[in-house]
Image (cartoon, rainbow, N blue to C red; front, side, top):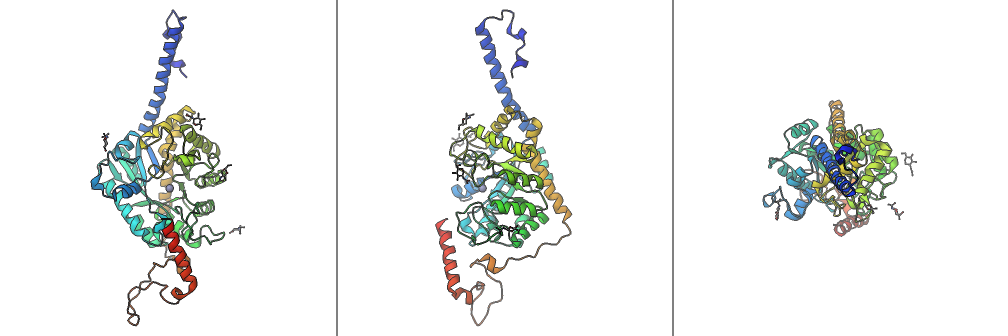
Length: 438
Ligand SMILES: *[C@@H]1O[C@H](CO)[C@@H](O)[C@H](O)[C@H]1NC(C)=O
Ligand SMILES: *[C@@H]1O[C@H](CO)[C@@H](O)[C@H](O)[C@H]1NC(C)=O
Ligand SMILES: *[C@@H]1O[C@H](CO)[C@@H](O)[C@H](O)[C@H]1NC(C)=O
Ligand SMILES: *[C@@H]1O[C@H](CO)[C@@H](O)[C@H](O)[C@H]1NC(C)=O
Ligand SMILES: [Zn+2]
């Protein structure tokens, strides 16, 4: 490794003094160690990172109630993400999740999502080092201007309340990606998690007709389908149904750590057929299946996925501020170069790493845009979910007030159904599960 720096001449003609040899050797080690670190930084300077997943917006809500005026975006305490650390980590584009808890499903998930979109939009438009982007062209321009580009992604299909018009309006607000589920099933797609006891009765129908319509509408709009958090069956169905490549924005390899959020090899092969990418999650729980992890564990995921589907299918989705424990040496967004340094050590080429850092994601996003362009003559979908499927007692059917009942906006179930014992039991279960898991 050090040979290029230690020619016999460099050791001097006296040669035999072991102390001197040792000294030269140590200096060489220092230089070589340093140069690998340098190489990682140089590479990331040339190919700055596009990261697939970050939950800073959730922390802004939890810690500051979204009051941006109270914080210094360059130095935010108690979180792993701020502008100074993004810059130090060579993060050029960050996909920011606008995530709302599953407990909001059938309640005010849409309002909460709008508020999270607002906070990301404000953060990314009121600060000169951030820039909100909605296309690959804008993303590239933003790199040339040395800005950190923000992409907005919805984390969980419950945010659209089973409504394609709502999905379209989110697109208008700049949302360019949506995870079909978070940890709860939606009426139309299945989660990898079973902690929320909702919509569990669906059999062999992991992506319903309406779910397929959601994927089609996302293809038509040019929104990236994200399969992190869905069940494997749902992921497979979506992969097969989508006309555009999809992403797993923050998932790792199930072969290396058998967490249900990770992706098994057979599904990785399907992803490759779809030309999509998996953006490796750095959260310790997904990396080592334990609370403790280190950079070797992380690199093992990269090596394994490379072996199964090749470097052209890999990206990085750190999950900072969404998870609680991160590997030693990867505590915040300034630490990404350590991952690249480790992969260089494991003989990944600069070309492969440039793909992982940004070119693979750009390729996927460009294909998503191309599919959108090809579908430009298709009209917006008018597919609607049935009231029976959506089972949401908060849904109103808009209609003029009925003078005989003397009330505005009764819920659709305000008639016979509400009085049926089956409905009341269902409503109570839904209510209780909502409260219990909040
Ligand atoms: C960030 O803020 C903390 C106080 O919240 C301060 O102690 C620290 O020095 C600041 N760091 C930088 C780099 O400005
Ligand atoms: C589920 O449906 C698919 C086709 O739609 C079928 O091939 C498969 O056998 C079904 N599985 C079960 C368990 O019913
Ligand atoms: C993961 O592997 C462990 C040990 O082999 C096993 O006990 C556990 O059930 C597995 N988990 C999953 C999700 O397959
Ligand atoms: C990472 O941890 C594993 C044990 O879990 C250990 O075998 C390995 O040497 C560690 N690697 C580094 C670089 O610390
Ligand atoms: Zn997540």
